[in-house]
Amino acid sequence: MIQGRHIRLRTVRQADLDSLYELSSDQSDPGEFMPVGLQSEVAFKQAFNDTGFWQDHCGKLIIEDLQGNIVGEAGLFRSTHYLDGREIYYRIFSGYRGNGYAREALALLTEHFFQSTSFNRLQAVTIEGNSVSEHMLKKWLSVRRHPASGSIFQRPVGEPEFVFKTAHRTLLAKICVQQA
Image (cartoon, rainbow, N blue to C red; front, side, top):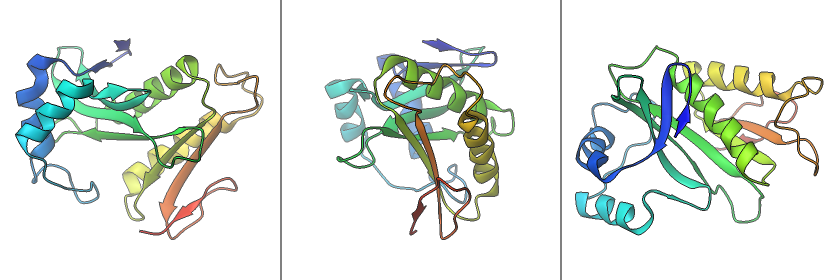
């Protein structure tokens, strides 16, 4: 478990599966920009049985508030096989948005990632027009890119690379552009 000021990040438990499946598959909840898709309950539970949704610094973590409510999910996945790093994602469920949970989850997972792995690249992607995520990710990127910060994210192999992508528009010098 990764403890923050207002949330905890933790792996998914067997007891979470029914409620997490309902929250994750609610097609009315993801908002305008979250990719939607359907996964059968059988496939969802099989993926949990296979890996617990977490393996090799990839997978899904639950974001819960201090009262133990599941308020969202965050995770990491391989974006490409040829890059040494991961892509980070987050989703806050309706009813819990606007409380800073995504920002705190992003900070906690980023810190955990660089403390617990030898990877030196973490990236995030959002769709152009998603101004809330774009603003939050710009802030996340600029805070962590400050070279004089003496940040705990510094690695012997060189400075960690934080990459923020958005479709159709370059935001900062080290940002890559991805077509939507």
